[in-house]
Length: 131
Image (tube, rainbow, N blue to C red; front, side):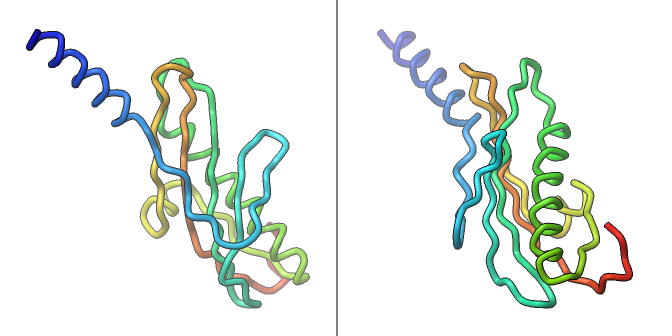
């Protein structure tokens, strides 16, 4: 009986440790064609805070691939916002987001879907810089 209980606790612990929580979106959530989502907050003419959720099927876990996907989602969202102001943003790398922003990730063991949540505040720059 103790072995069965221990096994159950182990399986549940492993399943829960692979989970990533949903991001705390502020404002309107935009869902992309691929099912990823982002929201914008603290929108000014100088900066914009982007919160994103990126989903990717991974038979073999590869965190870097998920981080790059979330970073691309964030760069595109910030670029779209800045374009509406007739300005631009400097794109970031996933390493920049990891150092100066926020990244959380997990992988569903049954579906092999990797969930990446990320946040970053982009600085809006003048239009003489091309994205």
